[in-house]
Amino acid sequence: MAGNKNLRVVTWNCQGAFRKKYKNILKYSPDICVIQECEDPSYLIDEEFQRIFPKKFWVGTNQNKGLGIFVANECISVSLNNWDNHGIEHFLPVSLGQINLVAVWACNNYIEDAYTYFSVHKHKLDSCHIICGDFNSSSIWDLQKRRHIRNHGSLVRLFSDAGLQSAYHYWTGRTQGKETDPTFYLHRNKSRPFHIDYVFCDNARIGQFRLETYDDWISLSDHMPIMFDYEMP
Image 1 (tube, helix red, strand yellow):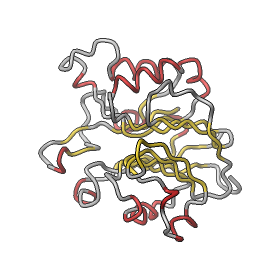
Image 2 (spheres, helix red, strand yellow):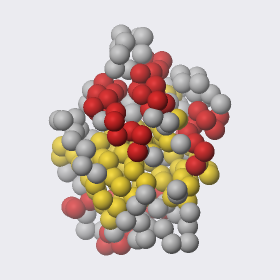
Image 3 (cartoon, helix red, strand yellow):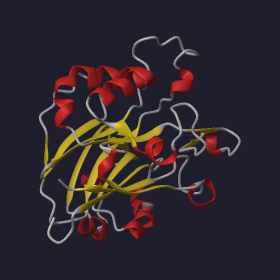
């Protein structure tokens, strides 16, 4: 990335129709966007969208809803990493030059899929720099749903062993399950908040971290965008 030592990332579950909402996140001047519940960009005819995001990767079970990585900075070289998904959907591992990033949308078996996927690829986590997206999970459900192994706490420990910590918890000093800033509002109801979207990385390299708020974003999605800067090695 010529002239820029930071990678600016926005991760957001847009709750569909990203083609109508993408301009709202351009105010962050993102280098890369990790977007959940977005449509297949190969079907979009919006010329401005194609110009802003010249490099794109997407996975999904139908063209209307999937997981996308959209690269706005033409100086960033990007390629897919060859991680077998073993039939587990909606995970996108990419190489951004010296940075390895995995985009996540845990939307079927939720945390069980995420834990299984990253357990299978445990040996690759030491070379992974950023894991971010909608995990649909929280430690508050670990005991409630009787998940004693493939649960949120186990995934957090798996990442921690590889030197990856939650950026939100690092910046706020909160512990898992004790978050005061929701990332999701069930049925867009302000009285039903949850923290289920995460950025895991080496927090020593985070220059900025911002989690958006209900009043500014609920008209667009039930999830709040997360923006962060990551210092390039």
